[in-house]
Image (tube, rainbow, N blue to C red):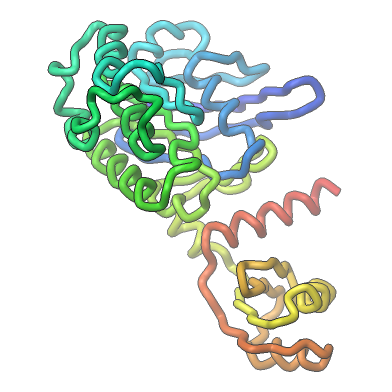
Length: 307
């Protein structure tokens, strides 16, 4: 059985649907990403899988155990790092790590090989209260505490939110090494650029999976011509392009508009059309889709179907 099995999970809070018929699996040694904005249902799913919340319907298994019937067995075999820093802020780095090791009936020394690469960065601050650490160091300490009992599955709920860019890169490098040790990792993030670091990803919005595949396969299967349009008249250009018969979607991306077309047009034809509508065009060039392009296009399609 896969390390994680999610089978038609549904969860609502009153009239609000948090999870809408979610199904997927995560294999041993796989780094699986749940990619979506705040409110997509990522944290709700994590709480269900870590036995902190009951689903309304559907089933889930973690390391072969049913999340309701065998919740005690699951809690001994998983590591969970919630989105908000939740360690004891008045305890030192070393005291926090020793405390979590003791809870699971182990010691820092017994499983030191698993956290060594991370802990060496914390060691100079081992006597410092956890609350006085920087964001990146808090993140590393939380990961050490989640790993100290040698879990088979690691749940990381938006672990890089609010962390600087350098620490984000370091964190994902750590996850790559942990994956090589055979640990199944389920990580959620709102950052689309982090999706490429995962083996497979599920794009999720409003509790529903929009697409599930490897990042490379998602990009390869995008299937529509995509152009970056640079113009000093962003707002006016968006209105013109969104009303054009050849447009599938036109979305602002920084200084450019990312235009997805339904027809096989070239860059010159798009430029000519816009200039005929009185839009000054600096550049139109074909580009490869990113995960963010894919997510926004799928979101727009899903929203249109709901209306």
